Image 1 (tube, rainbow, N blue to C red):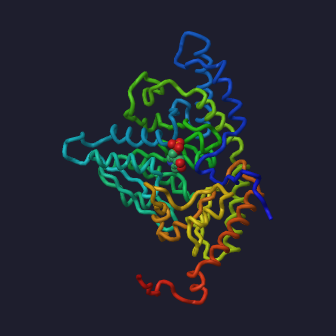
Image 2: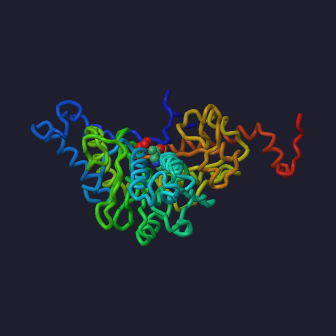
Length: 416
Ligand SMILES: Cc1ncc(COP(=O)(O)O)c(C=O)c1O
């Protein structure tokens, strides 16, 4: 029987965050101590040294995205990048001023985006913009056609994530970008789960604004980037904070030099190792999914089977109770299909958005693999989950009834 190392659990939650790659940490260390200058200090070596390090990181991030280094704005993470992109573009490209009593502009996004996109859009709705939240199809993939049918005369912005963080499905981003360019609509993509794992070319992919984050790509937390297109067309944004004019005025404040150096190094490593990492992870993920589906009945993969990221698997297990399943798999660090909102367990809005019922959404697990996941980790996870599901089903009267051929949807449950 496979065992987890003492006091440790197997980490399969790389979509939530990744460990920092030791090579990233090594690159960052000097910038905490001897190279501590403020890159804004123009008059001495300390400042120049830090500025050089920031310039290098900007080149590393730009290279990952196929962008020019002048188009990279450093932020505190993808949440901030999304806020700056969405609100900054909405305020800059509005069709009518606030308080004029008319729609300030129309925005299109998807209903299963991350909260860091949904919430800025909801804020804009309150401020007089109109937002279309496109419903997700059952396979989770948003197409250019879906966006096309929602475009209006006054559409100013489309924000569509490249890949979904809960189910790993991949949207038609280059096509949506091309459509937006054709219609002269600003196009933003939240590429937090995509960039660093899959190739990006902001030119070819017709992207105007792209958000990414350090801690999803083996870099540090609290640092991210926003790509802002400078030509054809030049994208303008209204800054959300005022201050010293750093980052072309889009994001003032003294730069997080250590974090930025880490993000740059992480981007460089991802670029160099993307193909090998991706190929290895696809194989591991398929092993994980195939093993679960073949060993367990009533086990379904959520989201499109093929059009998905290499490293994210989301699986529902019928006839088990979600919390009991998590408890029975304590040695696994995975994410559940439920989110804790004010002490109550809510089924994931992403899974619900695909049409997965509340029960099944609760009994779903997201397992996300990463650079440091080993084959033995996946084997251990499969053994644990299969064992736990079988055990829980032994205790489940519903599973028994189902196996006896009783149609549970037709059962009239007595109320006591
Ligand atoms: C798709 C997506 N967008 C945005 C975020 C937020 O990123 P950050 O933690 O860098 O603010 C996440 C992280 O959970 C994410 O997965």
